[in-house]
Image (cartoon, rainbow, N blue to C red; front, side, top):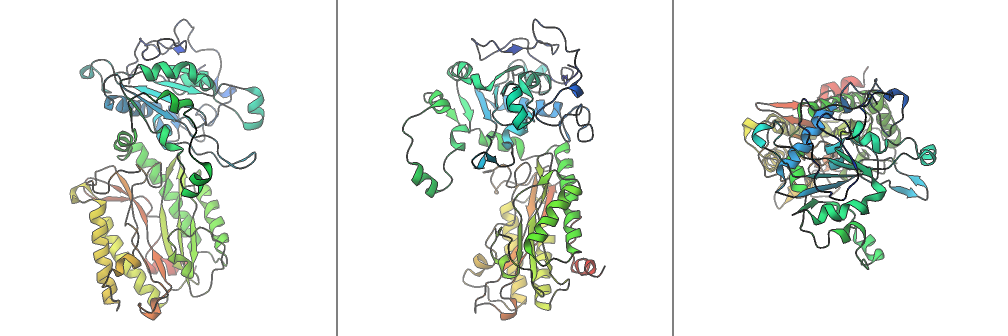
Length: 505
């Protein structure tokens, strides 16, 4: 194949193979060629089929050298090297792809790759496993902190299955396209995993905890497991450590190419929002459908998450996603939505009047929130020396001050009711990226966060009558830089004068 994304000038490749003493997997030498085989030369990639777009098959989506949109093979390899450099001596990391999830019978949901697996491999198919051992070699002579062997197990090519499900990349492509040093059939893991695990000093993985029941309801009906099977049995006697803390440290600071992808997602999503504000909608679901369409037409691959389209007092529910009510004249609509590009998400919330004109109470509350949001965004720089928790405290104090000026009594824990969520979270491949990474950590250049103050006034006699039933949130995706913020979603207008001008076009 004329496919191999050669990295040898950038990343040293070991000539020896570790970890699988009984393994008969394909091996490649330092020239990027399988031992005992001829070089790749005979088949054009454009004549083949793969389980995801490649530059050779989809040049309108990917540039030469990219494995996924905007992210090169070199960057993926450097990510794996950084992970390997953080592992203790003789330890391994095991990362699994997502599985296909079914909504009923044979009807499946749209596939979404596990973010950690995607971050390290760029491989976007289900039923795959990556194994990355600790670095080997001399760190002082290697630009990537030492060498490592990248193992990738994937589904084999299967003409009958592919007739129904679409193309698979196959085992050979795991080496030729995704640059694995050793590759194998994922259906034969039981032949190889036990020796890898038993020879490792420690196993870093989050697989065992991934499929735990999310609710007490599902746990109650499933009952306790009767015995350990499969992977759980293999690691029963191993020293297993969570991989999550290491992956969080790697993922929370974005590369220049990751930021470029997030800016593209933010730009396209912001334009879709602005287009929506200039339209008239009578149903929440119509507005949701319009945004989904425009996200894709403006450049995104898909939507990033189930959107919130909340008219009137539905906005008092933070995660209202039914989107099935009527949009009524004189009320506001709160929309929390975003598109995704190359796996990277945007996260935007805007609130605007359904009839195009803010009432006086709506405008007062909106301007109060916008004032606080501007101040918080301005502090999204490394030089500001703040944390997300610090920004939240500042947002709460600012909202308290604004509400007091509007005649609210904010004593007695009022802000827990009026501003019940945090002002921000990390974003990236996940809407809540690097899950578990502390909001008490100082913001660093390259981190991407949301800034989303909001106020939700219950229909309660405690609050001024003319504000009751109003819910407003204003949210942008922001990249922290050394001396100032980069707003990734600036195309979504948010000034009152701009929003009202859109309705007059």
